[in-house]
Amino acid sequence: MSLTTEILYGKPVSLQLRQELKNEISNLSNLGIIPGLAVVLVGEDAASQVYVRSKSRAFKKMACFSETFNLPENTSETELCLLIDELNASSKFHGILVQLPLPAHLDSKKITRRILSRKDVDGFHPLNVGLLLEGQPQFISCTPHGILKLMAYYGIKTNGKHAVIVGRSNIVGKPMFALLAEKMEYGNSTVTICHTGTVDLSRYTSMADILIVASGMPGLITGNMISEGVHIIDVGINRIKDNSEKGYRLVGDVDYESILGIAGSITPVPGGVGPLTITMLLYNTVLAAKNIRP
Ligand code: NAD
Image (cartoon, rainbow, N blue to C red; front, side, top):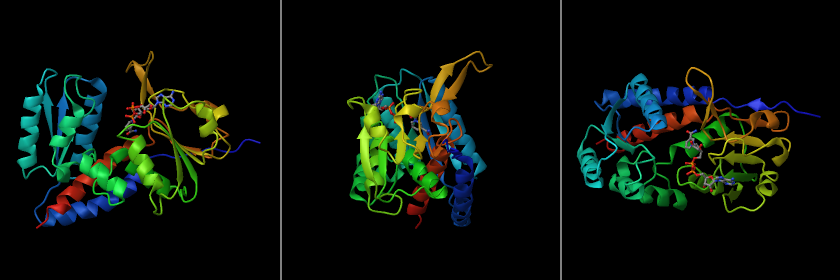
């Protein structure tokens, strides 16, 4: 017998979180503090340009300040580091984000480390990664943090469950592992992390109570790889060329049609995890602004 798969939209979760943030932003504003974010974009990557525009729109809507620094593709490491040093020293910016991926000649790890850890609102600096692993996070990477908020909103319990993560990136997979394994209300799961070295992926995905997929491989997870009732978080955002006006459509890493009627719930792409990532960036920037309050 097939069940009804619940669709876990990100928008209501995001709206609720933004409402809570509005109060914090207004308290800061009363003290003369406007949370400010510097976004650094190097080169012409089309998807990155879309993300950066959405981020700056969201900041404007929430009465926060953001400024985008567009640098040419051939920017040298020294030039980029000089800009980061200036942004580190500026009191206008509480958060700094360097949009990834960077052009191949730039070392993203080195650049990430250049940002002051107290302005690292992406949560990628080694100090912030270490604090997360220690169970004392300061800035949590936005996408995994948003996923926890989404599961909390929809009442998806993680305590004692088997969570399977597909993908071991520093941005999603690894921080997601750290959060879900932590002894806390929306953690305390038994966590399996799968990647390109995993032999027989479906052996693990079929044992999941919660399946988080961040592989960048459209349609990687199909209905025959999951168990009935599993909660699926589809993080993937993949552009598939088509004949539409835009010339492409967005799909996730999960073959949506084949899991309907088997999974207990799934986040759609677009409209699932995506809206939360930007909201958690706002959240981290507000946190950074609160931290400098005298
Ligand atoms: P990535 O692209 O850096 O790496 C992909 C990971 O998936 C690797 O760890 C790899 O080992 C694993 N993988 C790839 N193919 C696999 C396979 N066949 N079997 C098992 N594992 C496999 O990862 P990322 O930066 O986390 O991005 C993943 C996807 O999530 C991309 O589509 C990206 O656009 C999307 N993403 C979305 C958001 C959002 O806000 N919704 C945020 C970040 C990333």
